[in-house]
Amino acid sequence: MSVLVEKVEVWEGQVGDTPGTLSDALASLSASGANLEFTVARRDTKAPGNSIVFVGPLRGAKQSAAAGKIGFRKSKTIHAVRVESRDRHGFAAEVTGAARGAGVNIGEFFGTVQKNGVAGYFWLESKADAAKVAKAVQAVK
Image (cartoon, rainbow, N blue to C red; front, side):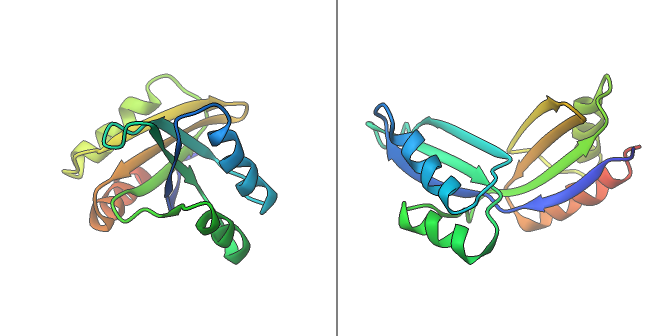
């Protein structure tokens, strides 16, 4: 299996830093039919008492409307590329090395092993960087 590459829109929003607020936000998205591939939540250091949440992907008007209703919006500062392959030793080093070869500085990278392989997400600062990474990673075998 070669590396599969897909650009993914990241949605972001703020929830209270209290028990249940993240669960409530995710339940609203789930009720709209969203099948999230990733959720990243952390305390918002710029807004004490709140957490910032990143999710994706959302597809279609119903999911977008549900996100808007809970105060989430498409990120204007994170441009994501999802990479997927069979699980193998050194995968993260290979794909991040491809980004380096393309001259792109990675904003964030996270990955996980799944039942059928491995998936990773690059979070980049521009659409141009996302396009460069997508092209470079396609060459990884």
